Amino acid sequence: MEEQAAYLTQAINSILAGAGSLLPELLLAIFFLLLVTLDLFKSKTVKRLLPWVALTGLFSVLVLLVLDRHVAEVQFLNLLRSDGIARYAGILFSLTGIFTILLSLQNPKIEKRRQG
Image 1 (cartoon, one colour):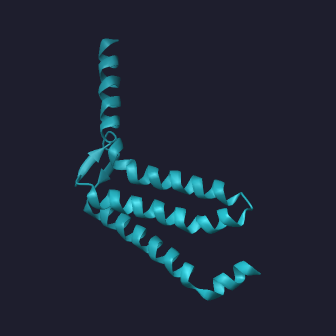
Image 2: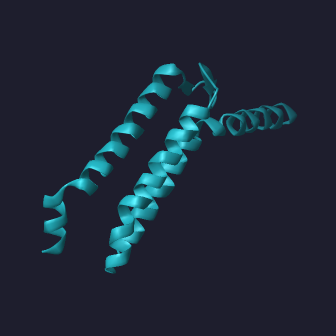
């Protein structure tokens, strides 16, 4: 019984130690849920804030990915590997999302469609 308790304690500590590597993905999920929730409101001011909330979320994820110094670590009981390729892909997708939102803000056709 004590062996099982020790094993579970070690497994939980290992999972908690690797939870920091999932912080960018968790932050992205939180901002996604925030965007979906805000999009339910019909107020025009809230609709105008949506791209800026999305930019804030993507930029904060980008900052976390750039500042993260964990390379080639294995977390979550050897189920997740955080290496340079994963970091590169996260940075690439974050930059792509940021540029897409910025370009859509500058497109006059989208602005006319929004007005009706």
